[in-house]
Length: 325
Image (tube, rainbow, N blue to C red):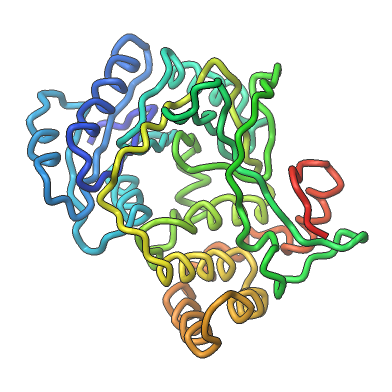
């Protein structure tokens, strides 16, 4: 199998024809570059004509895969990673369109500044319903004391509380550090995602919570999350997707994230203080510690900080955009 410089991973579930437009956009971008690339699409329990249509694309650089073991945005990404060959990986959802040259510029920036980036690089996100030029960024909300201490038993804590916010501020630097960001429009090296993080936990469900695992586990390992500066961006068209919202699934995903980056005791306190029946939350936590034990063992040697140590570091840096006290 030919090894590429860049692998673009595109999971989808019943998003035809948007998946086709997204692939066309990616090809227009990459075919004019000198990057050695491949696009890997993963149909996740797809029931519309999307997989059949994508399979007809005549290109040895575009591959159409299926992942039908479970309905999971994160597991579909993992399936794509396992079949990819690129040294650098880029993840984008199938309802997104890149601004002109965004991906090529991003790749060059990542390669030229890999040591300083030291982690992941993310494109700003623009929504089609945002008419005033504001960008979507994630805002990290933490409940901390005056001494920058955090209690995982508080519902408003860093273990799970990511908020979305829009901003008009445009950074002048090529990229800037943030505490957390979406995994849509995200670039990272294979060695960090696969060898260190072990990809996303296979126990993750439909969607929601995967960013918590990615952002915070990456941070506990001493890596950084960075946002690439405009005019490079990804337009999120927010079309209806085949993934149905499930509250229990979302709760379990966040418990998985807390266990992976915080360990057994941290995640237990976190889980039992979430909203819900205590016996159900306890059962979820027990399931998570069994299902994710081997993955946690794999990443544990690379973890450098406890959640408390990281929160103190982030609070001192001023990267918290909002704090509840």
